[in-house]
Image (cartoon, rainbow, N blue to C red; front, side, top):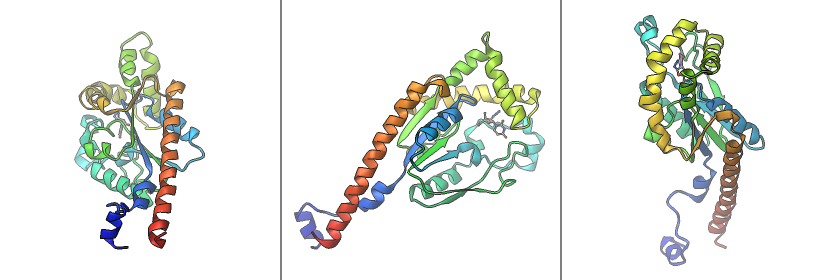
Length: 258
Ligand SMILES: [N-]=[N+]=N[C@@H]1[C@H](O)[C@@H](CO)O[C@H]1n1ccc(=O)[nH]c1=O
C-alpha cells in the first residue's frame, strides 16, 4: 500500500516513527537551592522506582574546569551562576540518553575544582532519567527535555532558618557537607554563602520555580509529596509501556500489511 492509499485508509505514516516516539525515557528535572534536599528527594524517588531502570544525572558534573587564573582567585568565583556550568555538554549528554545511547559523564572534583581528575562515569540508557541541580530549569533547552519538573522549596526555609533561631541546623549541615565531602574550610564556605549562594538563589534559582509542575516544601522529609510523584511517574511509565505495545503492533501491522 503506497503513501496515498495509506492516507486514504487513515493509516498515514507519522513523522517520527512510532517506535522512536515511545521508547524515549521519562525525564524528571529536580531543581532548588543549594543544600535544599534535592539529593534526598532524588534518592527516595530512585529507591521507590527500584523495579525500573533509573539513572541520576547531576548538573554539578558539568561544572566548567577552572582556568589557572580562576583557581588563583577561587574565592571570587561564582559556582552558583548559570555560566559556571557547561550546558552545551549537558544538552549533548541528555540528547544521547534520550536517543537510547550510553554516555560518559565527567565527575567534578570539589577539592581540585577540576572535572578531568576522576575517570568519567558510564551511564547506560534508562526508562527514567533524573536530572538534578540548582539551575536545571534555567536554560529553556534543558527544560524542554523534561517530562516532569520538581522544585524542592526548602531553600527558602533554609534562608529563613539561616537567619532564624534554628539556623545552626541548616548551616551546620551545609558546613559539614562542604568541609567534609568537599574539603572546604568554614571561613570559605560562609564567605561563599553570603557572597554567591544566597544572591544567586534570589537572582537565578528562585525565578525558575515558576516552571515547576510540583513544588515540594521540606524536601526529603516530605513523604506524601514523594509518594504522589512516584505514583505519577508510574502512571506515565505505564502509558509509555502501553504506547510501546501500540507502536510495536503498528510496526507489525504496517510491515505485514495486516
Ligand atoms: N558554595 N557554593 N556554591 C556551589 C553550589 O551552591 C552547589 C551546587 O551543587 O555546590 C557549590 N559548589 C560547587 C562547585 C565547587 O567547586 N564548590 C562548591 O561549593
